[in-house]
Length: 404
Picture 1: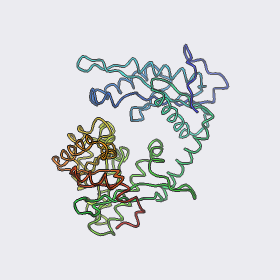
Picture 2: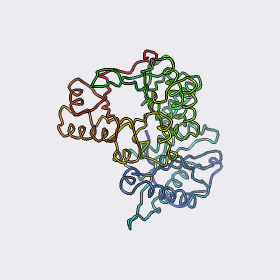
Picture 3: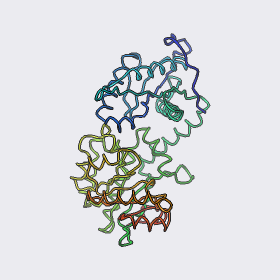
Picture 4: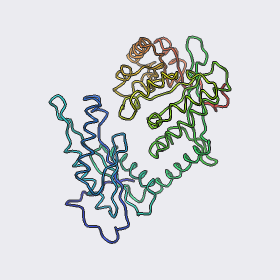
């Protein structure tokens, strides 16, 4: 579906009359940044990103880089055809390769993947951005350190994604994001401790789309914060009419946490509806908390100071798990499926889970096992000293209206 054109050599060709009304959009993504963070730390990686931005601006003055976050930059070039766009992509890759930061006598360098799309100047910029992102993802899957063109044959995929973006935006604006809730059970008492909320989306008369099928696109389209606001506001409304013992857990993304008014919105809504903030648990993924350049300083501490509880989600999915527990205070630590799914067949996994649960309790956080699939696994989770659990075996997500 996506392919890499043969490398072109030399400087970008002069724009032809046919190309004068075209536009190229390039997304430059740094490779292996998470590994660099683990080895050198985020301050060094931030310095490298700043160096990359400067070098891209120097090498390509006709296409000033726009920092998209998440280690990506956007370049926009009017009047560029596919050949010129590829040449620009190679210049961008060379610029990134020249960047270096010295850390303890070691030269910190990386490579870049580039996804690019070429269209008419009248084409939707949102569509071109989706296309460039798809091409960048393909370049990453190919191993990185390459440039990939979004080919016209993939317009069908782009059309579907554009329709999804429209549906997400309409659902947010009209308050029609569908919310389901999954029980989180207290294993010592066998009762529901709280419920985790998940966003769902329905296209026309089709089936419900789970979060994983549309939230990544919402993130790329700049709609993630709006989705999070919608879910959080609805959660507070439900808490205001439900039993006082009801507590709800909502997932919050980096874009929502970056919004200056997000915390104040939560506080005002809770105060207006007389909801104790501690009944709302803010679920922050390990990936989000591991990237401090994505979050304003002190935002997680501010949430706790306001009375909201925090859950560290996906613990163990990346190499930075212990660093997050060192830097932040959480009320819950949610163990990723990698800790849970093989418990019956893997004694070593049981040892790791037991030690991780003890660590969480030492830091005054309650350990939670996620994705519990069956009774045998549940018994082992309980034996490892885990306080709480969730998964299809304990209860599938159900409409939020059935909770309370």
